Image (cartoon, rainbow over all chains, first blue to last red; front, side):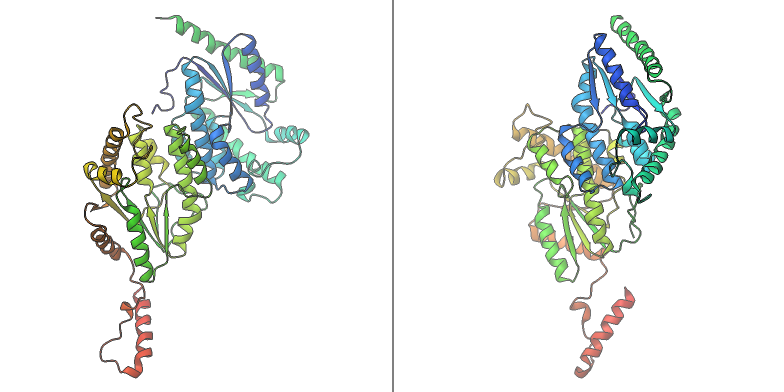
Length: 227
Length: 259
């Protein structure tokens, strides 16, 4: 089993992180479009999408069967399936892989639910270290405003309702996301996350992102030419 | 009073657990389920409430694992985590509540089997041990040990070789017999190592089931508070016949004090 940082594979892995409403998915979609247009072999891998584990996760969430421990482990299982079946083979084949949320989401969420931080990090030690992990930093109030404009109500686990922080879903969401934000801030130096100011205009953020991605891709091409 | 192997799960207190956690470990086909059945009956006759449990029976993922194994589609890291999820679910919803209520929990395999299987599949032993660190330390682990040569006839003449028990996901080029041999030998090696690390009570699984049962009973007797059974209520000799009820009550009182 290769550990985080030990994989030597030709592909490139770019991930986006941030709280709900940070605009990270929009940015990743724009990056995807650009890479496709540039002719790269690019594949999009979504958090929580493994066909095998999905049913169990869905059932657990719907029936609210999940505790912090099983919530953490079922997501790790799902991520492992995607890593083994999808992400590693693609990277070995030289693809550019894009992930909307990665292990840092699990670290932030699980720690906010009271799981042991060190334990979770070791749990995900099999993950491939991303070429660049973008963190879209946004103040809680801005994110809340964007979300409440776009949709009505929060889901049970998304709002951290399982933690009993508040009976009011909006308030619970605010408190839970606030905790998550603190966890992300701690991870910036720990994992060398690349911070993007998510309050800037969408075009500006995308421009920054493309420049950084391009630098890593040129490097990849050069590496492949070298003996 | 229990403690874990170093990781605390939120909302899962272990220090108020009064029951006993007893584990039977050992490779496939070694006779664990027969012993569990005998032990449960014996313990209940002694007045203990017993919960018997095993791997992959949880409400949350039991079915998912079964389906996935039918398709032989799981990667080794995924399989390890799937089992760990199942174990955590069973721990929180079944084992810990039973221990809190004072049950004797008899479990057919525990984290050690999960760890052995994963390590045989080449996974990092630090990683594998870490995953299972939230498990409570059992009061006793009995390891039914048998050599591969003795195990093979049991498998051949009873149910035949199973895909997973033969490690066919590991040695798929071989036939099931060779694969079974190789896989079980590798498992045995892992178990022997774990037996030392976690101080298992090793029991020779070659003799007749009755003989093994007697050894297990002796081992379990050592860790159980004697229940208030008939033997424990023996009337002190010399007590007048009319005072029988008084003597019984006195005996119960005496036991309570000792407990």
